[in-house]
Amino acid sequence: MRPNIFEPIHEEFRATARAFFDKECAPYADKWEKDGKASREAWLAAGEHGLIGWALPAEYGGLGIDDFRFNQILSEEMFASGSVGIGLGVQNDILVTYLNHLTTEEQKQRWLPKFISGEYIGSIAMSEPAAGSDLAGIKTTARDDGDAWIVNGQKTFISNGLLSSLVLAAVKTDPSAGRKGISLLMIEDGMPGFTRGRKLDKIGQHSADTAELFFEDVRVPKENLVGELNRGFYHLVSHLPAERVGVACYALPMARRALELTKTYAMERTAFGQPIGTFQVNRHAIVEMQTKLDAAQCYLDQCVLAVNNGSLSDQDAAGLKWWTSEVQWEILDRCLQLHGGYGYINEYEIARLWRDSRVQRLYAGTTEIMKDLMGRAMGF
Image (cartoon, rainbow, N blue to C red; front, side):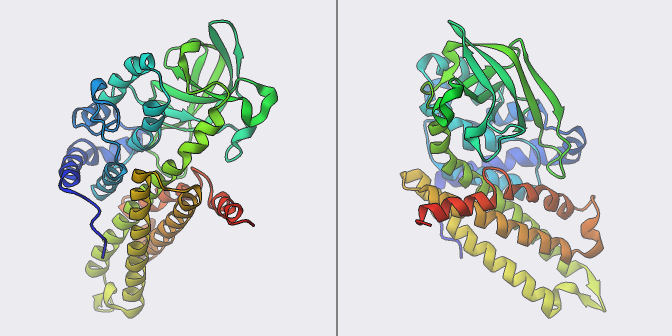
C-alpha cells in the first residue's frame, strides 16, 4: 500500500544502515539499557559507515546530499532491527540543519569533520526547569564580556546530554527583549563552569542518555555564536518543522516494530486450542492497527517529500507530529494488551517499546501545543 518514494541510492543506504544496526547496536540493546547510554564505539562506527551528517558539505567529510528520506530510512532500520539508545536522530534530524546553514566557515572547519566522524556527539539545549514549550521563557543568560559571553543557567531533558561534545544552547543575550533577545551559542565539552548533572531517571528510553546541564560563569568565545545575534528564537522556530517530522520518523517505525512482534505472537500464542490471532476480536484489532499505520505512513511520506522541496508548513508539521505520535501510542498500547500478562514483563521487547513510546507525545511540542498551533494557523 505504501507508495515507493525511494530510489536505488536510498535502498543502498538502507542496506548499509541495517548492517550497522544489526552488528553494532542491536546485540548491545540490553547492555545499553542497563548502562543508561550507548557506547562511543557505536558512534564512531556510525561515522565510519557514513551514517552521520551526509547532508553536510563534502569538504568536511559529508556528502552534500540534503534529502530527508535518508533520515527516514535510518529511523526505520534502527527500530526494525530492535536497536535502542544511540541518539542519531538528534545528530542528523536536528543539529545538521543548524551546522549546515547557520555556521561560519571557521566554525565548519572546527566542528564538522569530527561531528561527521562520530567523534563529536551533539545535543541541543532549549528546555529548562521552568521553560519547555514556552521557549521565550528561558532564563539562561549570556552576558557580553568583550571577546566572550559569560553564560549562567540550567537546562534539562537534554538528549545526548551526558555524551555530547557540542551543546547548542539557547541563551538570553538581551534579557529585556523577550524572544527577540535569544541567541544560540555552541558550548563545548571541557569549558570551565560547564557541568553535567544526573542522568534523568525516565519511565522509558533508558538507554538514551538524558541529562541536566549546568552553566556557571562559562566563558564562551564570541566566535561560538551560531547564527545571528538575538535571532536565536527565529532560528529555532524555523527548524522546528523538520524536527517534528523527525519525531514522526521515529513514531511509525516503533509502531510497526510493535505490530510485527504482535502479529508473530498472536499466531504462536494459543488459547482455547487455537492461536489468539484467529479470534475475531483480535483479528479485527490487528487489521485496524495495520490500516491506521498504513494511512499514517502515507501522511509521513508526503511530509518528508515536502521537507525536501521546501514546502512543508508549520501547520502540516504540527499535524503530522501529534497525529503520528497519538497513532503510535494507540498501537503500542493495544499491542501490549494483545500480549496479555507477558506484555507487562520487561524481558519482552513489547514492554520496552511501550515505555519508550510514551514520550513521543511530549517532546518537540506536546500534542496539545501542536493542536493549538494548528488552530491558530486556521484562524481560531
